[in-house]
Length: 528
Image (cartoon, rainbow, N blue to C red; front, side):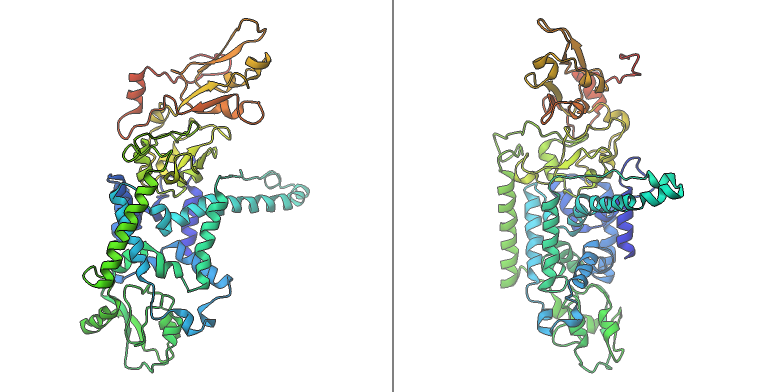
């Protein structure tokens, strides 16, 4: 519960103004599977992900303690099990899968993820529990919590007014909304539904991060010990959350044990304990808990099959039309409205580095960062994009790059962020009130923070019409957001002219291109 509370606090605080004293991406950075696969797929070194070495060290000594005490996905599965009325206390022994059949699947997923990373594509967003849980929390749980909180404030507002509590009577949380949130919720619900077939089925049979922790903790000295007081009652086998106790209750499948102490609590004779067991006992455990080895027949099948699966999956996803990889797709198609957030890496690198965790979407102060669907092909699902018709990109905010754990969105200083060209606005003349209907409308000009839009006379019109200076427009989208035309805006931003750098200065690049992003000083003085 404490870990979930800490996760919730960090997620809630991941917004502007950013609290620099909190490591908001901590949970993602301490996951070794997330860190290693992300860096390898993106071919980059991310210093913050070295925090995962702490988890590696803990796993080498204590086994899969990360799965039992840190991973919020495991806690969510525990809650779902109890809410679903499928607690292990009432399950028949045969439903507990105590023989551990099917545990090789997670090693298959682990190998497939590694193979996909070789091709420069990360399957972390589909396989890693921290990425899945963070995305669910950011896109589904947090907006729903805000909805409930506002409903509660609305309910108590009459009483607050009557009692004179003005702050409470006017309190309101800004309601975030996200594309693809239903799909995200259904995917997460599917993982929880696996609990009806086996307790923590995801952790036991499919989680590649758990497989990696199991490999690290296979020879861990801290493990379950059973004394001669054991009466072979079998209660520990029935209660074991992970099915890691075989027919011989004195042995333990160390690669599956998450050190939950359930067997200790249920033992009627006090024969079970955890500690640094003698070498002979560890050797006996290792014999029943060895993971699939590529040297035996079963291990070879898992090893080769996983590599083929990962390679084929990466190849199919990377050659999807509309996904500009620059490697396997010789004629990439760019969606005309796909605008990436400030600091986004060039498209091939972004697709490889982004883990679709949703941190940037949660942190965006204007809620304009939304998950993509098929705008960049099947491999781009859940990657961040800007929906500028919904809201513009706040020019005094650079939080999205600071919360990104993999550098898919580069952390930028405020000066650097103000020189990022996201795209270029252009006027859709047959929708514009001024151009098409000769109606006096100055909204896009007034909203532009850089005076990139000017109103000029047009022959045959009594009112001026808007023109866009491409050298002054950085694609922030405030003009598109505020356009009064119903439906699609009459002035839209497309990727034309965007500047995306994997390294180097945006200020220097803007100077090279002759771009000038000078903000208005005040309404009376329109030009700086």
